[in-house]
Length: 322
Image 1 (cartoon, rainbow, N blue to C red):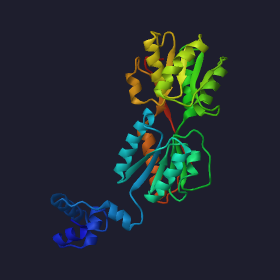
Image 2: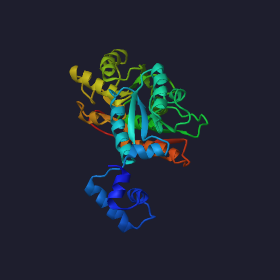
Image 3: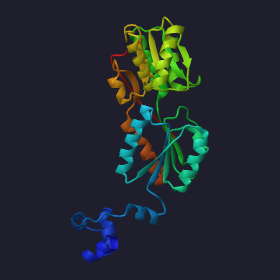
Image 4: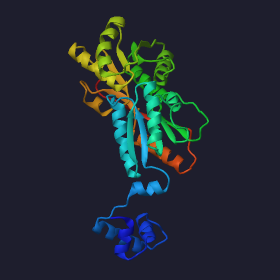
């Protein structure tokens, strides 16, 4: 049933139907309620796609994320779906693992005429391949820079602060020989924060470079940590996936955690609470993170001023692993 047919059935104007269903104050509350009740009774549903088409935009938001095998992005996506749906938007997901992917994704976003983009892959480099006219929120990036485009903003966890909090906690627990595993580059904020706190306490933060931050990588690197740093008493992994890999290897090798080596991660994904033993981790509240990102896109679509960067505060979840 179209809106015109519904209006004819009620013997009222199509404009009155539209105003009632959009909660317009231009008609009385009683009439709005009456029309809504009849719409529900007769099974009439507005054609959202048609409404948006008439307004010259789609109800699609493009989401670009690394592979969802990373627990953080899988859980973030679930929250993004929830908040987008609440505003009448549908998400179109693209996975990105390379620069070639970004070239393809940029073309896809234009073809589907997405209303906005949430990009969590490559952050600053990703922006080079995306439509500059489309409101874009860069999520989960590690370094903020202002490219001067008013239709681009950043929403990201406070990784630097997280590193400092986690470092302080491990030091309070008496850990002095800490190894950070999964470093891709020296400028990484979580590493910088952790290192500053550890070095300020008179200790050295050892590192193992690795771009593959998966559970498998953590499992394999556990042996390297034991061989290269026999005095290691704590491992801070780049993310929870790596940390869970460490816990699995230590469990197999019968290495006591946290008595012999404490293990902690970043992101605080839900599966970490069920690791053997449950993982100590620090990460943002994903509900707040997703809501802030979706609100940023919608505000830019509405022409409202937005902050160029928003840092999401992270909380430490202390569990048995550290």
